[in-house]
Image (tube, rainbow, N blue to C red; front, top):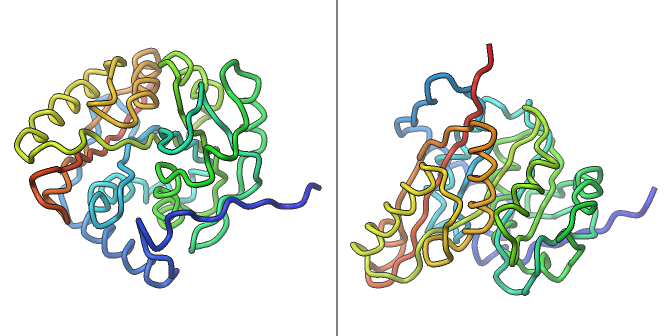
Length: 276
């Protein structure tokens, strides 16, 4: 057996608390607030299990309430979900295609998460997929989701993918390669528009939400910073007959920021059709 190697947290103490106890309290508060809100209904003719989700990746004081709404929706499947495939955009390192890490575990203040070695090997077979630890070392778009996942799920393995300059077809091919069954959850990390005045951002983000609900796969970076992984998911969702549901929508002007330059956040669930 190869020795364990760990990707240490890069944004603990910045995007979320660095101390485990404080982090648990914040997550418990966020999830309790989400539980108190009306739940978006499951579409008729669909499995209640949310096979794929989209969630935001800002600091918890900004986007945590929107993220909590989708993560609270996973609680009934906390023992069923055994693998999480997590895709998010690169912010610090330029990547052509998709980048995987070489480590064996990702660490947060809540503990270590083992990576899905078989899934990593399967993805390395695809064109446009490389191993690039630098792309993961300080990338927040993936890390910010891990404490939520550790809180709402029991034991699971993680398949983290940093998405750079990739086409929707490349992303869809990667997702299809590791789609799995109802033990596998797909998580796509994305915020929406950036740095517009509050009312303008609301209009822009509502249009982006409508595009995602229509399963369009031509999103741009001005609509969503995770446009490439989102577009790959919507492309595959069309092919597989998934139905998206909007679960939460706000911007930083609704939470902890001013309303002159806001960032938009949304969360979605994607449900597979029921087959008789």
